[in-house]
Length: 49
Image (cartoon, rainbow, N blue to C red; front, side):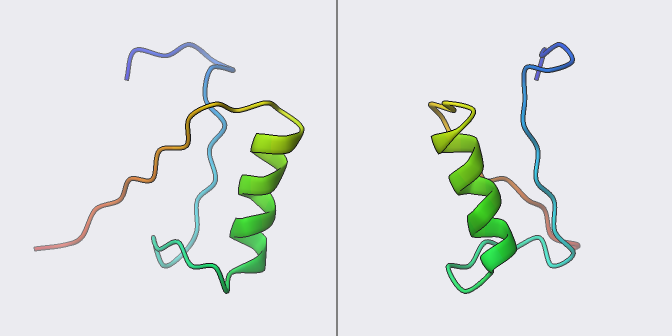
């Protein structure tokens, strides 16, 4: 992505999924937006063929 250390805030999970029922994931996204002033959220993942 061409970023330097500190340019990205990353949250990973074991299932590689985002759900509004995942309180840990939602808390991380909320922290990034409210406290770190993140302007863009990118959700990316992969699946095995």
